[in-house]
Image 1 (cartoon, one colour):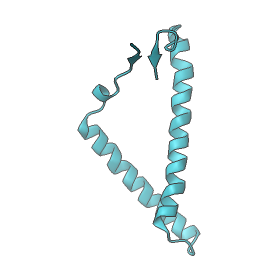
Image 2 (tube, rainbow, N blue to C red):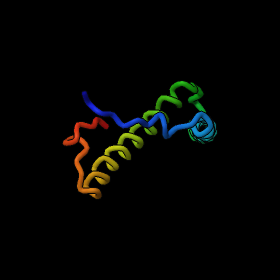
Image 3 (cartoon, rainbow, N blue to C red):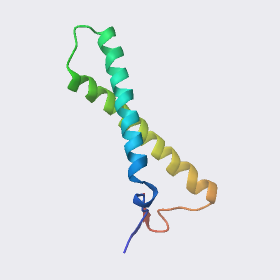
Image 4 (tube, rainbow, N blue to C red):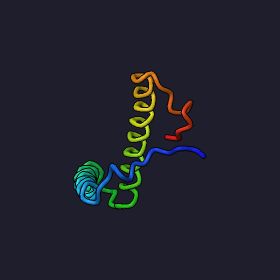
Length: 85
């Protein structure tokens, strides 16, 4: 049986709610700046898709960097221990 890291215990409803609110405000500010720079574009979905792809890419890079740094700092390989990240 493979072990998995349980991130659910690290997240509380309030933390998720607070971060969600922050992201909503961040997107609204981005959309406003985008519309000012591109007045001919007002498709909120299109603006959101571009913004969220950038967010996911940044998140993916951060996770990959953590995966690279943390085990090396501890001298441990999570994959060798059978833990999926």
